[in-house]
Image (cartoon, rainbow, N blue to C red):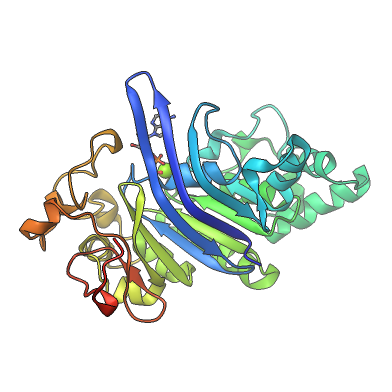
Length: 326
Ligand code: ADP
Ligand code: MG
């Protein structure tokens, strides 16, 4: 059974200025122990997907399709079930969550509280586990007594990962966990995540706009644009020989891991991704695409099979068997 399965997920935010269809039909599975990267520029819907997995989006948000965690439909869970799932099935390390820690409580206590709240462990066992977890993320156990402000940004990020691992989730969702960190620390946190995945068989959904980071961390990659997956497949293939012009632009923009220059200019593409409330006609990427032909503004192409385990949504990809399901 898959750890996580998104089935034709649609997510529309309701706002005073109208509906925002942020995710428009995303299907994705993560198997136990598998690492999957989700890439795309800011605004493509990546964090919306992360939030949807654990039902953390605003109440009025419209959700279509299904989210299955360990085979259970997250949106059918009773409150108690959902609470348990939030720590033991999947946990999230959020983008820019470096300030998520309580500033007036020692970090060890914060981790211990999560353990006590979601398990039947005694206080003594919880304290022991805090030490183990801190060691696991590369911090000396005595740092449990530190307050958040006594730690560096990289150390706080490690504490957040320890906190997410407190109840031994099977899936860790890491939403841009390294974006706020400098390049050296970023590399260390990535190494840590890779290690956890290897040693504990943790499933990982790793979200970032930096394709090169994903290629070194993840087996599979999905590239998002305007609320959809436009390409997915084995990381090295997607990064090395991208089929979709958008993946190609992302791959060109990040030639080497953590290159500061490419952080400044995320894609090398002119313009920005479209506002989901006002999408271009046809393929939403066509106004920025160097391969666009006239038909691209009229035809919205769905994912097409490219070889065995790869798909891409581009009009230039021949349709298998000559039938376009798109
Ligand atoms: P990413 O993580 O890829 O940068 P997000 O999932 O954060 O993208 O956002 C996708 C789109 O949804 C963006 O256009 C964003 O402005 C919009 N959005 C995010 N949160 C809300 C919200 N609470 N209400 C309305 N629109 C939102
Ligand atoms: Mg985001």
